[in-house]
Image 1: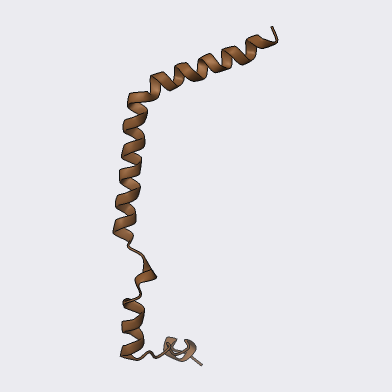
Image 2: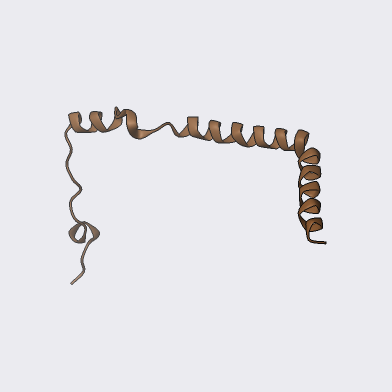
Length: 73
């Protein structure tokens, strides 16, 4: 009446050593540490540019909004 886990689970697919080597050597698998580094560097550049150009961009935005709202007044 008791079913063991091994009886209820399907057997895993069997792969040859050549198939496993082909999967691991696939160049399209990606480079996770590389993508993490690119993401962190991009975020750092955005933060640095924002720190330098933030006040100037805020002035440009404020001036543009004032010009648009003053046209109809």
